Length: 198
Image (cartoon, rainbow, N blue to C red; front, side, top):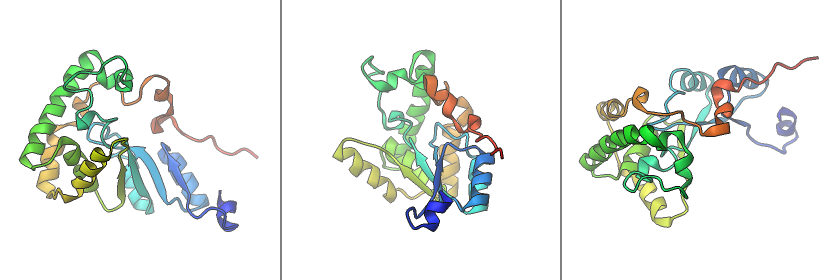
């Protein structure tokens, strides 16, 4: 990739779900511009190691699934997760895990009402306020959801607000693993790139 940058064929290099060791080693070869990682109010495992490392190296963070696959927007909460809904395959949206996580969503919805926002807007605003180096990338197929997501930029949060929101949805209270099925083997904790052999 470094050679492609030097040839002008690639402008920036990014990584996805990379381990700290892989990020350090790659950045030593050529500056990494961004690291894409799952980050949301219900997936916060990158906060202790990945976020500080990226900030130390000057790497931006692209937060995918900032709405927890739609769960933090209410998808699958009121009506549950019907069998034809892909969310029903997620470990956090089935059985007892779903019941426990609905409690967290209810807390988020209560706080969102206080901030005159939707739960999705508050979840996105919380992430946007984590730093200017963080860019959430919520996905949607509906124009109205896009408009609501953009509305999160109007939600202003203080440090105290961020702490209140974080405390209402503690990371250790989220029930179930963050990756469904076989995808569990592709998370950053298991993503050390093997050292190059000569």
